[in-house]
Image 1 (cartoon, rainbow, N blue to C red):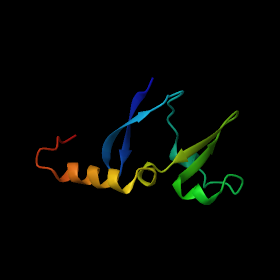
Image 2 (cartoon, rainbow, N blue to C red):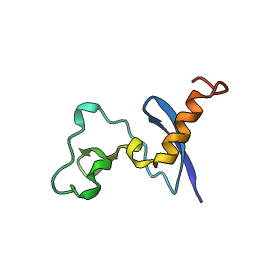
Image 3 (cartoon, rainbow, N blue to C red):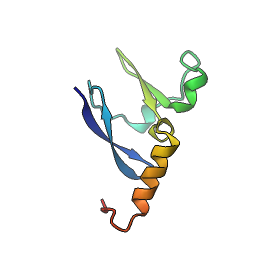
Image 4 (cartoon, rainbow, N blue to C red):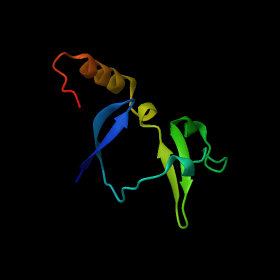
Length: 87
């Protein structure tokens, strides 16, 4: 079963279908650190940063880089549509 989440991509609210949501957290921007060399790989360009808590390491994705070029083009097309609903 899938569920949906709404994310902000460059100022635009976008709905995404995901397999599951286990937790929703508010993270102060001051607690976000650059990705550590321990988790840096070829795919690190998709990471915004990491957050260390007492018992977890949270990896933050850059959603704008995760979506494909065709998805980004579709989003831009919708934004420019005269029928687009303003938030």
